[in-house]
Image (cartoon, rainbow, N blue to C red; front, side, top):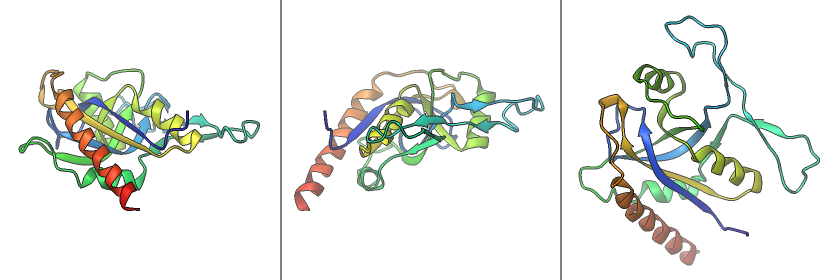
Length: 185
């Protein structure tokens, strides 16, 4: 396979007090928060002194080269700009660009969600984006992350799977805009 680009879209939980269920988070930066080293800290902030140790990334062109470590991955700036110019499909919905925390774990404690938001600037979290972003980074594939909040513990908004349908509409608008941009070039 040789994809021209990858759009990773799906639902997420909210970290930012600016977001509510149904709002869209464009992932400018993606942080794999399973790559944290949490040492001996003051109990009032378990993330104080926390280090982002990163994960290994490689280049398929030169796999023998020692792998470098990355702590964050980024959506392609041109794809992100196209997404930022698309309106939310629901008139009352908001779109923000920010950092997505991603790992094979889910935070459901308000204190940890608040600490991640304040310490690392995370706006939301999911369980898929970091893996996809890491592979795209390794293979040099342009990548865009789009997430819609299905819930947010910040406001005790319960999970709503129906937001995924609205997200699919938004994603298809972005695909259409990308095709128009490519055709114009």
